[in-house]
Length: 184
Image 1 (cartoon, one colour):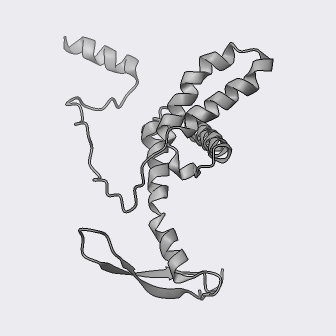
Image 2 (cartoon, one colour):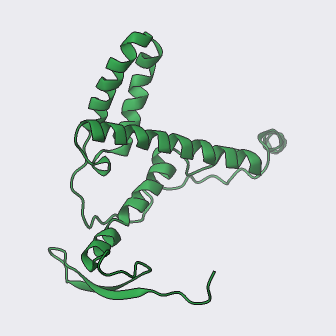
Image 3 (cartoon, one colour):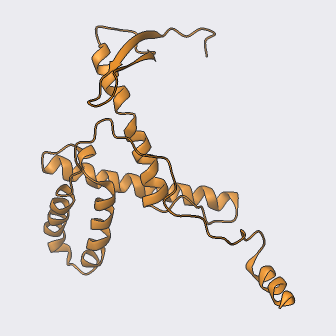
């Protein structure tokens, strides 16, 4: 890596109805102002929320907020399995969006995941000849789950549920049972 890095810096005004207009400084390595206008880069900056949504989808919607494996090797496998499933769901969303003239970001990840789960038993019991028709119906169902226009969406970073009043289990369940039996 070089010792210096050339960056382009500019100010961007963010106007939201009902809020004061803010000015932020954007620094980027996209130096060519002809190819990458300030407006395009500012629009990309606003899309950063999508990264937050993607992480939330992985962590909460796919129940990856708590990893359940015991060894580092198995934890890695668990993470890779979640990433594979996430990418497969996003691929089906992209196919549904392309087929029905929509943008993939306008289709709900959670509802698509639930639709895939709902179609799973039907797919398992459908003949090979009927699968393409069923797949078309599934893509239509996924494409119908549009999300609203949410620019400048603001979500509080708070827990919805309170933690349980119990201590964390820090040893194997068998040992904990034996210790609990001794105290009774």
